[in-house]
Length: 61
Image 1 (cartoon, rainbow, N blue to C red):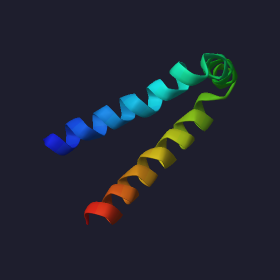
Image 2 (image 1 turned 180 degrees about the vertical axis):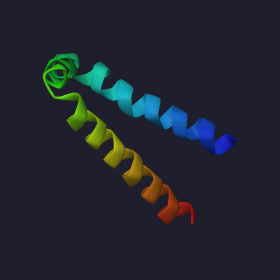
Image 3 (image 1 turned 90 degrees about the horizontal axis):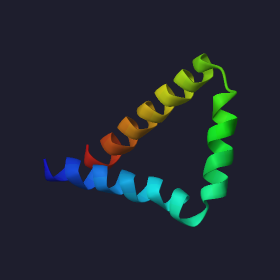
């Protein structure tokens, strides 16, 4: 359970860095994402999940 809390904390740090350092870039990314088809977003999301699982498996496995 400690590992899960650490992982969530790291996600918050990484996500927060964008908004703390370059909020204008974050807004541009959000605007660009609104124009991307939903199917493409799902594909990229699925790839990110698979890459994350693979990375954790390689490190922890």
